[in-house]
Length: 196
Length: 174
Image (cartoon, rainbow over all chains, first blue to last red; front, side, top):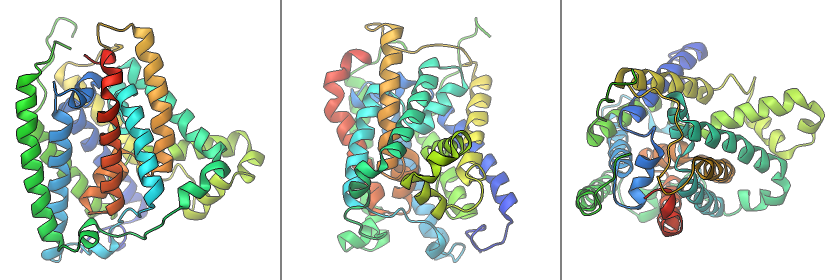
């Protein structure tokens, strides 16, 4: 049955309309969870507010389990679902640079649009920076295209990489997340937040 | 709504489940996860090809892009999704009484410093999202949901680096 667009069950234009509606849900939940506030987001790195960890891992696990169950029930063909390819070096280098951007800027791209939508000027400036950063990457592409393309591993799943079944890996991830949630609850008590 | 105290934020675990359902819906509908930086790339590609078609023709980056994407770069799933994010965030902020023009920062730094840091952070994040083929949404979160090895690696690199550098930027936040 699914995914609907790759199976051509819905038209391209319907897919775009649903993209817009999905985005509304995305933005709404981000804002309701407090992701429109950079000080709330940065809290995870100091322990005073761990909402990022809780929302992020709960969401990843919910979607992951949903996809595994949908596949089990025959509701979705996971072969038609896009799995992000792995280019080892650029995945690490890009992640490191993004991490530095995160702790300095306090937002990531999705949350900055969310923050800007409720009037955060710092989020708007961050978005301006995003455009500049993308342009720099494009303009100097020949300088780093080697790094960008290096160590291509295909689109392996982390479960395959570790030699585990998808379900067992999912279980391990859930256990790890529950452990992190406990630490998070402890940290929030230990490092109480100021008003912001 | 200036005298009203904003409503409290949603329980984070509930927020996480709802966000997970949105991500599941995205995969079920379009066969791909959520994203953000891809929409910015579409805008940049459009801007460059409109303002300077000759520069666009000589850019390997843009050639790669047009090879992988047919049609107008603005007619893209992530562009429509990100327009939705702006609407959804605004609706939520309006319902909760949080709509306000504001530069949010720690009392230990000035607004000006906050904006400079936001700009630098944005530039780094924008650049890194291209190198890493997606940001926290598209690579880390959506990648993890489909068990992508690259998604997990990028997630660990983003959060690991931010944790590692947190000490040096603590005045900005606490």
